[in-house]
Length: 317
Ligand code: GUN
Image 1 (spheres, rainbow, N blue to C red):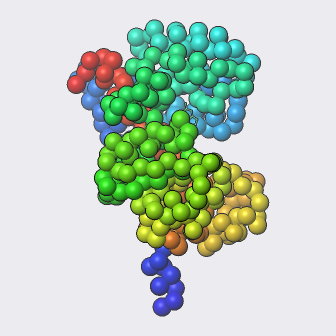
Image 2: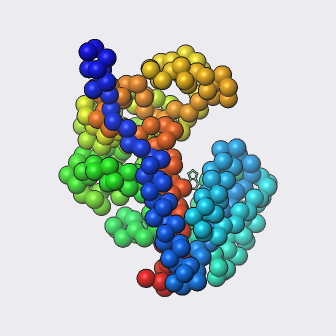
Image 3: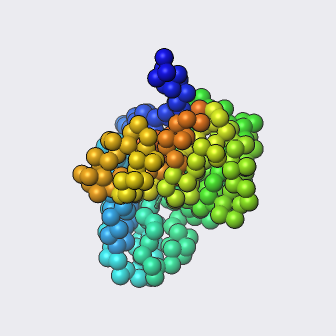
């Protein structure tokens, strides 16, 4: 009886893998249709500068998924000592190419490269990341065509799980260009009441505890604790942090700790989000796991943006 009561009080899991598969199936269907009806295959070019291991994993996954869904893809790997001018020259070439629909420059770029200049050089029509100021401006106006992939994925996850956004109080912790700011815009566009918190926010738990939908995109392992969460809230964890400390893993993972300790023993580290999983489990109504939550949606939405960019550039319905 005791264990049943405990079972009943655990947060439901928002399954990012299932939703990502669903979106990828839809995109693959659309790609097949574009090919048969218009003889067009959308083409994504992914550029990586340097050999940051995490970026190599992400870039590999983007290229592989493109191929799985029937898109054309091209990978450019440039050395870490590439100059801003050299990278800009590549971007200009890709802008000019008729066959290229989407251009993604993997971030972060090595120190010394002027990231913002590179982002601003990408043709907004091919900016499948949605980071160009023109696309950021359109998003702020509620006219987004190419919205950033992780934020757009969060919205898909919420909507497909039946979470009501209109009228909800959504609190976003983190104000990055990649996640915090754009997800706040997308939630606002769907009629949420939106609060953005950050490192200077006073009484963070007092604000996050008001959230019906709480989005954590801070980059600090297990930072959002039970005291930050309103009972029954939907909690979206965007963090991807590596930890190798066994004591920390025991404290964070509760019932799952043994499995995580095995992962640390085998691989040297395990991944934890910005939300304390064991505490969120006790307080939240729904939550995303890490891994298996939001991360998988980013690539799925990139595929969708690439198809959308192709459709618009090529004047297809
Ligand atoms: N680095 C981490 N996330 C992203 C992303 O969504 N796009 C790009 N280009 N780089 C990233």
